[in-house]
Length: 158
Ligand SMILES: CC(C)(COP(=O)(O)OP(=O)(O)OC[C@H]1O[C@@H](n2cnc3c(N)ncnc32)[C@H](O)[C@@H]1OP(=O)(O)O)[C@@H](O)C(=O)NCCC(=O)NCCS
Image (cartoon, rainbow, N blue to C red; front, side):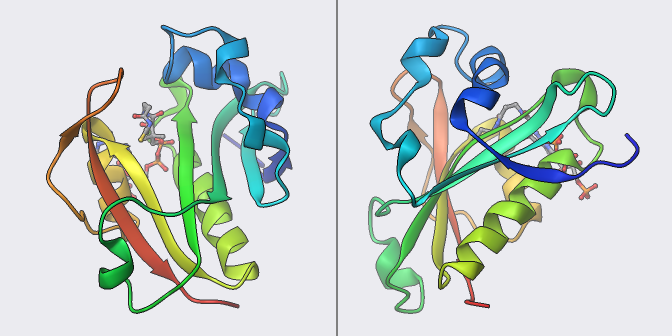
C-alpha cells in the first residue's frame, strides 16, 4: 500500500477489525475495557488510503507482567503490555503490523521505557520474535483463544 502512516486512534476505531480477526466469538461491545480511556493506553492504526478503513492495529498500555519477567528484564520497573495486534487478512505480510508495533515501541520509549510484554498467540510468535521479543515461557493455554506464549523486550527511554 502507498502512503501508509500510523496514527493514534481510539479503541472504538479499531473494534471491528479486532473483533473479526481476534475475537469473532465476542461482540464488539464485549471488546471494550474500562481501561480504554486510561491515559496510559495508546491505540495505533494504519488505514487503507482509499476507504479509510483500519487495515492494521495494535495497542499498548501500562500493565504488570505475569510471572517472573521483572527478574529477566534488567531491573526495568515500568511494564507495558502490547495487545490487540491485528492486520486485515488480505493485507498481511506487507509490513503494516511491523509499522504498528514500531509505534507502540516508540510510545513506550517516549513514556520512559521499560519492559514491553505480550501474551502472544502461538501462530504469531515468529512475528514478535522477528521484532526482538524473546520467548519467556513455554506455551500455555489461553482462556478462550488457544495457546499463547509470554514474550517481552526491553525498551530504552528516549
Ligand atoms: C500477527 C499479525 C498482526 C502480523 O501483521 P502483518 O501486517 O502481517 O505483519 P508484517 O507484514 O509487518 O510482518 C513483519 C514480519 O513478521 C513476519 N510475520 C508476520 N506474521 C507472521 C506469522 N504469523 N508467522 C511468521 N512470520 C510472520 C513477516 O513475514 C515479516 O517478516 P520480515 O520482516 O522478515 O519480512 C497478523 O499476521 C495477524 O493479524 N494475525 C492474526 C491475528 C494475530 O494472531 N494477532 C496476534 C495476536 S497475539
